[in-house]
Length: 83
Image 1 (cartoon, rainbow, N blue to C red):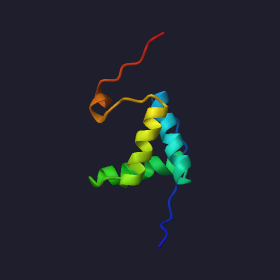
Image 2: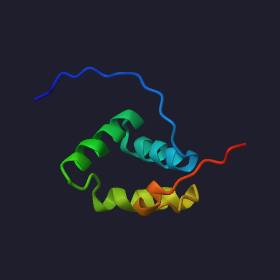
Image 3: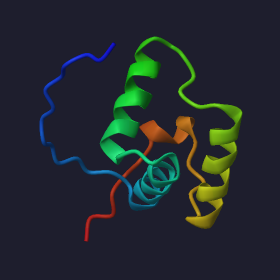
Image 4: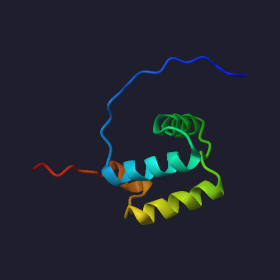
């Protein structure tokens, strides 16, 4: 059963390598980055894991390709380089 939704266009700022991993994952799942983020958020709101073991393996591969070493613990310690 499909649920009707209304989407809003938004501009978000996100770490470059993290975005590359998200784009790569979305491409491999044949969905948009927006759909991927919606799914991650909705799963997180219910404290449910959003990814299968196969998808986690793909994420690990993409993180290696894009040199992304961040973990959940790092998320509250990010600082931007103020040029």
